[in-house]
Amino acid sequence: MLDLSDFDLNRIDRDFIEDPHPVLHALRREQPVFRNADGSVYLTRYDDVLKVYRSRDMLSDKTEAFGEKFGQCPLHKHHTTSLIFNDPPYHTVVRKLIAGAFTPRKLAEFEPLIDGIVDRLLDRVEDLGNLDLIDDFAKVLPTEIISFMLGIPEEHRAQLRGYSLAILGALDPVVPQERLEAGNKAVEEFGAILTELIDHRRRNPDGGHQGEVLESLIFGEHDGRRLTQEELVQNCIFLLNAGHETTTSLVGNAMGTLFDWPAQHALLREQPELIGSAVEEFLRIESPLQIGNRLAGEEIALSTGAIPKGTYIHTSIAAANRDPEVFENPDAVDITRSPNRQIAFITGIHVCLGASLARVEGRIAIGKLVRRFPKIHQTGPRTRVPLARFRGFASLPVSVR
Ligand code: HEM
Image (tube, rainbow, N blue to C red):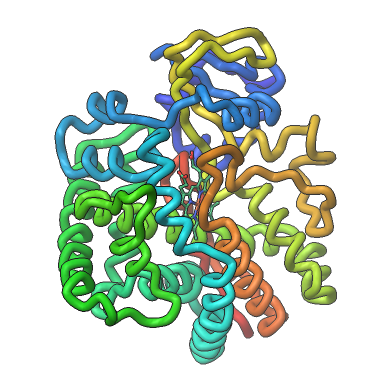
């Protein structure tokens, strides 16, 4: 039996980051509404997590919490302006404007583009033979897609993952000073690049290309309102962050999972048509975003009783996705799992806007990699991105020969 007396989400250690599930299972069993020393709660049951996401009274606005965490600085401006950390009515307006960039028609335009990018990357993988799956493959695809969507020129693309990790790293429960500084620098530098792009695009309203979304963000209107320059810049940075690290992790985590479960790897090689349900299972077993947050705007009744208005809530998406009440044999990987009610993209008014795009990227990238390189295997130790909120690999050395 695991001892939880020392546990606090604000004091988690390297072991938890490596493998949080022994602790998450114990929490779900024994203290599913766990109270941290600062009064916040950490939820690990699927039903509780879902209830929070479905309630309109659970708030995402973080102006106050981030004020305490960051003080007045670029990181504070960024995170409090992006739609994810806002409530209606601002959230509704920005979401409507951004949703215009993710319509099924836009997605249909992206598919051949994703196909082409993956094929090109796989040619390079073949030439390399031995490579780092993250650096040489997984992170390049979302960078290319998002750069295309936002019209970011080639010369800036190499910096994008660094910006993304620096800005998202500041959201972890525990943030050292140097990580705050790196996050602030990233917001400023990426903001400057985007400001220039947006200004150029404003002066050239007809200069867009097919599939580009910057145009709908600059010129789109909802109820007669357009995004201000600050809202535009910060929400474009957010789009990079939302779609970049998560999709890189989906692809990297999927391959790490297949290396750990060789029979499942063999099954996917033999039955490539399973890629759709396989991607759902990868999202469930190693959810790229592991922890979410809400502030209780009203009292809410959860499995062990009501928690009061004003409570800060951490939802464990990772734990919900391995709840034995919902998923049979939850720690086992089964790429044929059906139904699979995983909530890696959550649910409710903030449900991931890029879920369809991420699924298409995942199916094409993982599906083609497994089909084209039946001998792909890990050649050395993998290292993790050292964050609790985002689960992914910093490196995953492989050979395709
Ligand atoms: C496997 C990949 C991805 C995962 C696991 C993921 C997960 C999530 C989750 C859990 C949220 C909700 C966060 C919250 O409110 O607490 C979210 C929101 C969001 N995601 Fe994703 N995401 C992925 C890929 C993408 C991509 C590719 C894009 C677009 C380029 C994107 C755009 C967004 C946006 C715009 C929101 C904010 C929605 C809102 O607040 O209304 N995501 N995502």
